[in-house]
Image (cartoon, rainbow, N blue to C red; front, side, top):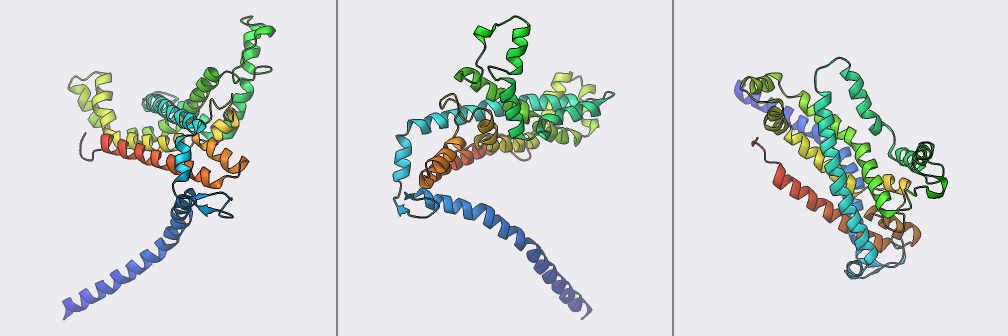
Amino acid sequence: MAVVRSRSKRSILERREERLAWAMLTPVLLALLAMGVYPAVSTIWYSLQTGGSFGKGMSLAGFTGYVRLAHDPQFWSALRFSLLFSLITVAGQMIFGTALALFANLKFRGRWLIRTAILLPWAIPTATNSVIWAYIFNDQYGLINSLLLRLHIIDHAHLINWLGSAPLATTLIYVLAIWKANSLVALLVLAGLQAIPEEVVEASRVDGASAWQSIWRVTLPLVRPTLVVTLVLRTIESLQAFDLISAFTNGAPGNATQNLGLYINLQIQQYGDFAYGSNIAIVLMLITFAFIIIYLRTLYRPGVN
């Protein structure tokens, strides 16, 4: 009888805990539905419409908008820039950010100062960073041209139009994006490095591994889950980049630095074509999912070092 009563009390407690857990989770689930699922489903629905704005005056058009995308050269230009921007900047951020993390993880006096300096680019708001860089590289009164003038490398008749040249503007956007976000990568990877027991690294050194071999064959495999998560997060943000490019070049010169985020904003804000903007957003979402799936299937294998 005592055993039966004990089990009964335990089951009552378990049910209470379960109800409490659901009560605490419900607001979170509702928030996710409101901010995640509902906007996604709404965007899919709007992408099948035509005309009007924000649901007003729209009519069902099926996949007409996607057919229009296939014949839109500006869309393909924005897509090409988005993919190049993501591939180049994410690769740069992962390489430089991991290198910074490995450096900051070394034991030396004053390393706290290095760790603080690493975070400075990330601490400054993205739009502010972009505006500052836009002023620095202004062709008339920018800091870079002023320095080149003072060093007599150029003269007033040959000022460099940094943001008026498609190759230069594109290169500067890549550099800005890498400089801005490699500090976040360094922070995340440094957290993973801090979790590695020192005995593991010391054991590899005792076994005769060089510093490079210890990093490549011991340290990096142990932080691979952190690297994969960081890679996924940086890829998502790079594909959806808006404020960095908008505040720096706003897609100029011409459409040379226009990505899909800017093109969506152009269609919705300037042209009022909410349906076509939704078409582009759905394509961007599918591309993002494709990248995530590829990364997880090829890089993340639990239990394998």
